[in-house]
Structure formats: structure tokens, C-alpha cells
View 1 (spheres, rainbow, N blue to C red):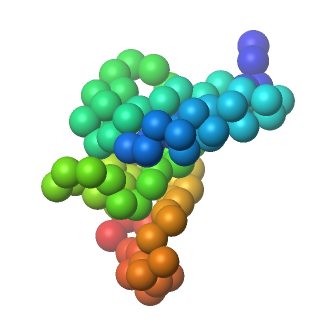
View 2 (tube, helix red, strand yellow; view 1 turned 180 degrees about the horizontal axis):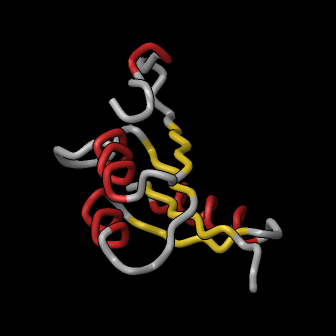
Length: 101
């Protein structure tokens, strides 16, 4: 039985996504999965694969944000660990809602 954690990484920037995949692949204990945006992430979260950790960019292309993806993940998988990332210098910590809100 593996002690590896499956990490779903959500970002719409191909370079960032590839970098995160390489980072998690090189780190013992993690099995990363890539999702290029909210649609891919939602499909994976609705699948049967166990996801232990969600790493999501807050600002995604389209109308669904990374925070929306996080909320959906928590509804679907209440025990999931959430990590949010952003390169948006205008986003402040208080703009990020509490878990489950």
C-alpha cells in the first residue's frame, strides 16, 4: 500500500503547470495530476480517482475561478487539503475566503 498523496494541480498557464508537475514528481510521496483550468479540474474531481490535495491558481481563464474550484472540491470531497496560489499582485489575503465558505 502506497503512502503517496495524489495532488491535483490546477492552472491555466502551461509553464506554471509543467513546473508544478515537475516539482511534485521530483518530491517523494506525491503523485501529481494536471488540470489546465476549471473544466478539467471539475471533471477530475467528479471522477473516481482519490485526490488528497488540491493546488489551485486563484485566477483562471473563464468565469470559474480557482476559489470556485476549491469550493466544489470541498463539497465533493470534504477531507481534501487545499492550497491556493496566485501571481496576481492585486489580490490580498483578505480577498481569499475561509475554507468552506
